[in-house]
Image 1 (cartoon, rainbow, N blue to C red):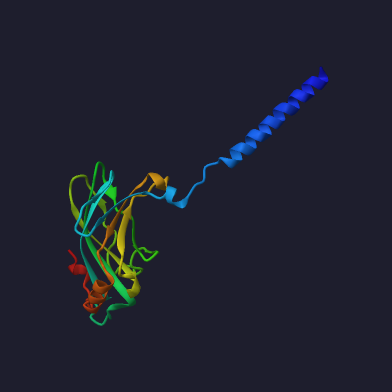
Image 2: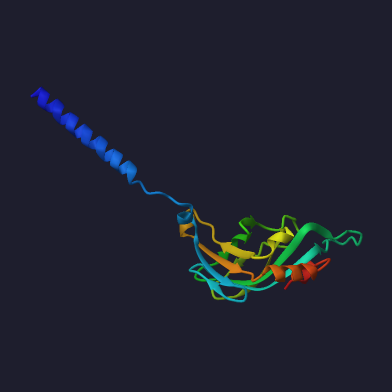
Length: 195
């Protein structure tokens, strides 16, 4: 009887080991693209909508330098070795108030967030209400060679990124157009004149 029980334990143990090895082989492989947010795409001038918000990029401007804020006339313009990209957009929430989160610029495999200059342009645009389009301005300081092919990406914050909404807007900047835009970039752009 004792030998029979030990043989039964050995058979069950071997079966469990074989089952564990099989489960190890069929474990799901998590790929990076499986963990990306749900992205809707469009072009400048188009409404790009998802279940959380809608966004429309109206126009894009470039600046070689920004007018310094403050009352002192002796303050010099804020300059860059790259270029300031100023994006004028409108956005609205779909069902409940939405705060513009996860705003970034993607170009050539690089990602840029904000313009890196505190107080130069206000990229904190507040909360957007359902069904009401509201204007906003976001800016980025980027290298000149990253302008062509740039796209604005706006997302929502969430614990599970694969379940969050995201909108990508192609700014329509070809290499030829980028060169022309850089040649005509504004010197001393006034952030107070955005609108």
